Length: 403
Length: 79
Image (cartoon, rainbow over all chains, first blue to last red):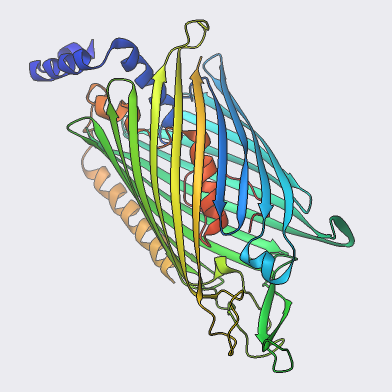
């Protein structure tokens, strides 16, 4: 009845919109909103859905592909359960690998189970994630609560996450029985989602993550000047601090365009105790067309400074207490361009499927490293090799159904 | 200490908002029936959860930064 109290202009506008979008599409819209905004709005449980994804990453000598399956199901409109099965099949001949080790293949399998419990305007969430590969086991659990307030204009959320990791080392294709390390991770996150106008919504997140334990790779090495070596340098194992604490704050704004499209902007500032400061910015434009199609385009910018103990080439062996030559800890700029398309359809033979959607997405990532040199090049003076550059293609193909 | 400054600013803003709200009742300025645009699926923050989780995983492996994405992710030896 509230709708009928609205002004005539608004009713006319709603009528015009109804004429543009069929009833099933509007119903699906509400369903999709409930799914997509579950993190943004407490008091609404995610819709029942299933997703089957094929993913492929190809760049920098690494190919990773595999499936991901996600199923969500509600029970009594109070509880929603989600289960995910995810696989990474890795074939790696990356710059790190070819410079100091041998190409390898391996597989990572991840299972996760999550539950949301809705009580009034509060949603309680908990989940468990298990990731397993031949030399790394990770177990993570988390719990959180979100609460609607101010006429459902505002949602605040808190969550805590804890992970325990066991790290091993493979030598010659088998596990090294003498090597086993552990690390522990804790995360504390708060968020606020705010309806700002009829067409603008924002969300701010802040997260502190702290790690303790063995945080470096058992395989990666750092290089140092060595006049006795034929190429002028030698390698030694990297050494990281045993603790790391990071702070990240982000703001996202999403605006509904007058011609039924959306523009979303996201910014994150990151700083950690290893000396890395990073800025991330991302814009996404989404545009529905021809009733059943939705197209989206995105651009992401990422820039970080190097960790305090990073160097491409150390002056000598054991130069400092902590030594790293991980390119992810160096100074670099990354740009990612993404294009996606989705097509809505129905499956007549499966009446229990309310709606189905086919999706394809392609992202191109290019990373320019400022102080990570490509050691595959032969030069007279170590440290004068050309800077490394990484281009990667990321493919996704997935089908979603709502039931 | 940008993080500390950020926390201090946030606390100040929250305290100010609480003080102001005590002076005048805060009314929801967007009514439930005025949220049609916000309810459109193209406005959902996480329209494709399985895809978002995958891309978050890729970014976390290739970038040094992490966190504040609003999504829960597990650990892996992906670097």
